[in-house]
Amino acid sequence: MTLTPELEQLAYGAPNYAPLPVVIAEAEGAWVTDVDGRRYLDALSGYSALNFGHRHPALISAVEAQLHRVTLTSRAFTHDQFDDFCRELAELCGMEMVLPMNTGAEGVETAIKVARRWGYTVKGVPDGRARIITFAENFHGRTTTIVGFSTDQTAREGFGPFTRGFTTVPYADADALAAAIDEDTVAVLIEPVQGEAGVVVPPDGYLTRVREICDHAGVLMIADEIQSGLGRTGRTFAVDHEGVVPDMFILGKALGGGILPVSAVVSRRDILGVLTPGSHGSTFGGNPLACAVAREVIALLETGEYQRNAARMGDRLAQGLAQLPASQVAAVRVRGLWAGLDIRDRTARSVCERLLELGVLAKDTHGSTIRIGPPLTVTADEVDLLIDRLTAALATAG
Image (tube, rainbow, N blue to C red; front, top):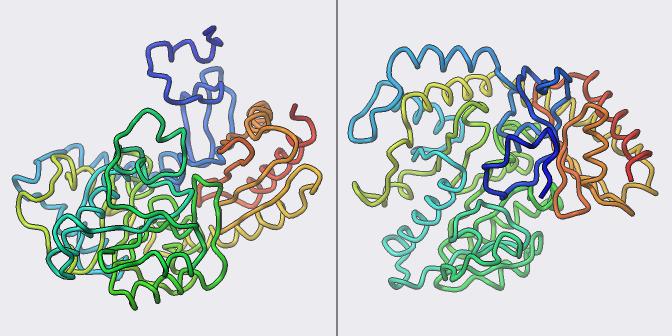
């Protein structure tokens, strides 16, 4: 393969990504700068890891202060940030207990383990028979267990054999979900908005119905809010749009402030309490540096400022996207500052490449869809610029 000058430095990296041809050297707020000094509006935000923009000063200060104190103890010892982090995150979620990990995929794996153990020790499911319901077009990570219940063949191909114990049903079909639950079902694992699938927003009332089905069947509702949570949809959590409280939250991405990986499973004491010393763990999970930055993330969210701006700017984004010509855009889905655009008659990649030329970074998914999700700090002028550049890109992309 012949490398473009921009990508020559990737010659030693495994080819598991196909990045756009830009090499970023600096970033601040909603903007990044490449090695040649050209600036771009970041309309992807690290797949929601950068909800508060690049190098938010409060987050940088929290990390810098902690770097001068202690960065890692392992969970063999307790440090002075841990208990406050767990308490503050539990309170943000309206829960009682927190299990910190590092990556989103680790958070999902943790939730799966907890749900199974809960099923055996609390619900009374016979050992080895616990089942979890998942949804078509889901994205929960890249481990072998998780891709085993993915419907994305690119994610699955060549990585089997896969872990048993999962049943997949269509998304947003409450009847199919209810029919799939049996006496061995311990949990329903759901994205309140499906991000990787193209920002797929379920119909009004669907999450409420999922909650009712889980309650009736006596199974856990696990909300994967790794991408949708922490302000992205204009509420602290995407389930808040329907006033639904899951049994478990899985959080990640923005919890680390775009600085380092931080994830967590947040739940009630009767659920996370099924774990015992040695039954689960992580050397870096809940480390002092992670807790310090995550505590500052929680403090930012507690002001409500970022959720309110996401709601306001999300409305502005939705209004602008609605004006895009139907001859070029087949569908638009928006929830807060998160949008999916289905493109007609060309690849979404070609539109993203044209956007790059026009100074905006966005990303395609599944061939024909563009995901848009600028930082929650984005301004009205920046949203208008994004719409203008997207209009131009659609008009000129090949």
